[in-house]
Length: 238
Image 1: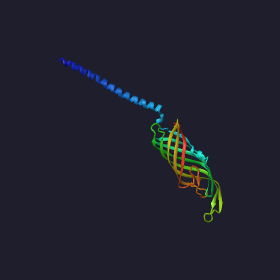
Image 2: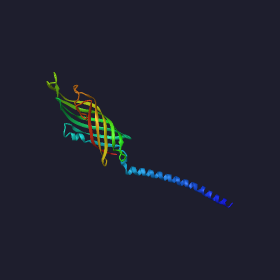
Image 3: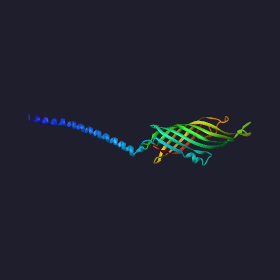
Image 4: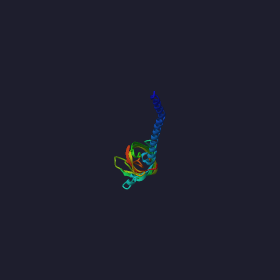
């Protein structure tokens, strides 16, 4: 009978301490959750490079360098905005002045071209999600002035009998581009952006029924497929 009070006392202690242990477990879980949330907030503040930048602006360097060795002169600028996860809307604007002097043709063109499309990132760097490889597409449209200084007139065979010409006239052309490229961080918010673009000619507003031989933003020797390169520097605004 003497042991009964001891058992009752031990049971009372256990019943009293159970809520305390449960409360301690709850506090421990809440503390761990708070620590994880604090680490996440701290990481986003001190390591913002782990998130993809939303807005980039840039310029092409390839064509200005190329103009030192060819008749092609001009430049191109671009802006890229991330609309959803790996999807980026891209707009490009450029000006080009070019000269075609081949196969008895002599043509001058100068004007603006516009490109609108998207990039989709195939892969992204964990440390900096703005780095990565992408694919995409552009729809391009050029509005330009064309002057046909000389074109061959062949009355018989392949021999040129005489040359004709047409004065300056406003014409246009449009095409699509399939884009494959990469963006790599160089320094601070500056990135190198390089892409190769097979171009597919769709159509044009022709001058006197003549097929275009040179189009700003597209290139020379117009055929069903052409190629262009964008090698530029972009800057991440945010």
